[in-house]
Image (cartoon, rainbow, N blue to C red; front, top):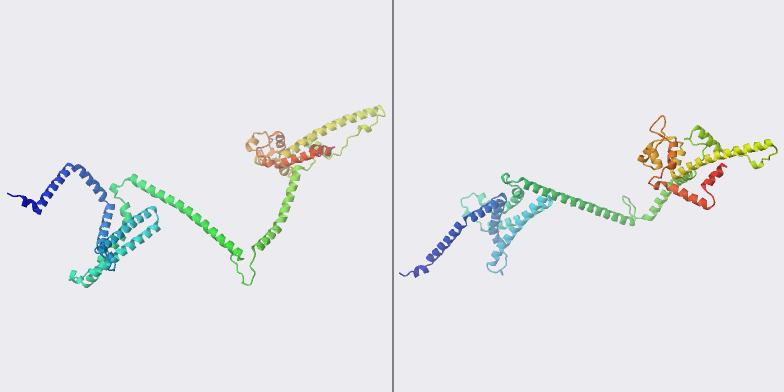
Length: 465
C-alpha cells in the first residue's frame, strides 16, 4: 500500500500538522495551568474596569472610523499615485488622526487633574476638531457609496435620506466620551476603593493646586510690575513732550516744560516751609542753650524750706564779705572786732563753698541727663511717675524700681524729684548712649573753655563771688 499520495495531499498534511500543534499546545496549557490562570486573572483585573472599558469602547469607535474614513484620506486626486499605496496611506492618515485624538484626551484629563480648566477646554476643542474631520470623511464616503434604494428599499424616505448622516456621526460620540472621561477614569468603584490611596491622591492634587497658585500669584505680581513700569514709561514720554495727564492744550499753545514746573513747585514749597524750619531751628537753639546753661533760680523747688532760704541767699550774691585788710586795729576793741569779723567771714565762706558744691552737683546731673533741664527744671515739676522718670533719664524700669526713692505723701505712685536728683548723682549712665549726645557736646565745650583758660566751675565761682 502506497501512502505517499496521502502524504502529498494538502488536506491530510495540514490536518496532521494542526493535530500535532494542538496536542503540543494542550500539553503546555496543562503543565502551566496555574501560571496561565494567574496571568488571565491579572489581565481581567486590569482590563475589566471602568478605565479599561472606556478605552476599549474608544478604540472600537476609532477602528471603525479608520476603516470608514481611510478610503477618503486615500483619495489624492492625481494620476501619479503609486498603485495600492495611496489607499494604505489613507488608512495610515486616519489612524494617525485617531492617535492624536487619544493624546488630546489624555492631555485634557491631565489639565483637569491639575485644575487648569481653561487649558482643558482648549484640548476639548481640539478633540472636537479631530472628530469633526473624521465625521466629514465618513460622511463623504457614505454619501458617495450609500444607495438607499438597494440597501433600504422598504424604509421611509426620511430614513433613506438621513441614514448616511447617521452612519457618519459616530466619531462625534468620542467628544461625549471625552467629556465623561474624567469621571470614568478617576472615580473607582467603592468596593475596590482604598482610603489611603484616595487620601494620597487628594493630598497630591491639593499640593499641585497650592504650588500652581503660588506661582500664579508670583506671575500676577510680575505682570503688575511690568504694567506699572510700562505706564510710567509712557507717562515719562508724555512729560518729555509737554503733555500732562488729564490735561488739554491747544495746538498754538507752547508746551509746558518739566523744569519750569519743578522750579515753580520748589519755590512754593520753600516759601511755605522755610519760616517753619527757621522757627524750629530757633527753638532748637534755645533748648540746647537751656540744656547747656540752665537758668539760675533763686532756689530749687525740691529742697526744704531751710535749703531754699540758704540757696536763695547764696544765689542772690548781694552780701559782700568785709575786707579784713582795710580793718586797722586802732584799739584792743577794734582788734577783737576784726577777729570776730574774720571768724564770721570764714564761716560764711565755708557755707558758700558747700552751696557751690551742691550747685555743681546739680549742674553735673543736668550735663549727664540733658532732658532733665527741659522736662523738670523749666516746668517746675516736683514729682513724676516711674514711666516719666524712665523716659527722661533713659534708665530702665527694672533699674529704677530697685532704687530707694521718696514718694509723694498724697499719691504713692509719684516720686519726688529731689530723691531722683540724689540718686542720679551716683547712678551710672544708661546703656543707650545716643540720647546723651548733648552731654558730649557740653563736654567738648568745656574742653574748649579749658583751652582758653576758663571752665564751667570757674564761671560758677565768679558768679557767686
